[in-house]
Amino acid sequence: MNTGLIILAAGNSVRFCGKKLLHRIGDRKMYEYALDTAQHTGLDTAVVTQYQEIAEAAQRRGFAAVMNRFPERGISYSVRLGTEHFRDKDALIFAVCDQPYLKPETILRLADGFERSPLTIARLTDGTRPGNPVIFDRRYINELLSLSGDTGGKAVIKAHPDEVLYILADSSELTDIDTSRDIKS
Image (cartoon, rainbow, N blue to C red; front, side, top):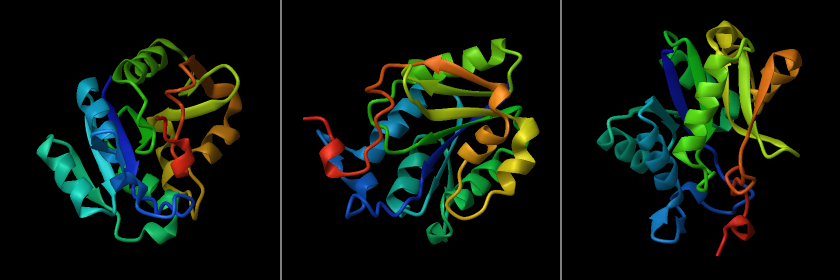
């Protein structure tokens, strides 16, 4: 299947009180974890970001860097930019850049489960709560492009609940960093 991986890395990190994607966790910046993970999947990857540093790091790894010059328009604008970039793909995986504990094998297991299923959306879950990444069949491209404001792919998922396949993942991998307290020691 011709699948594109879109890493959303353009948020303003309001709850973090700083540029969290540039914040160090251990020996690397948060965004580097997402880029490392993407690189190990071997998937065609685009990184949607407002940060020049992240765009340059993405390009050094052979990824497309899609600049979001208007992050204040909300996550829908980043989703739109990524969707437009990979409009020719059969499926789009949306991952967020603030999940440093996500493993490449988990993304590949999500993609494999999606390919084997007749369902048209797949997402990770730890068995109690759903999480990211999420993969959408190309039939949802127009819906993804029509999102507005701070509404992401969750709106498309809610519109098609019977089309969602849930793939089990470890809860630590689903942890996204919203505040500095979310960072594991």
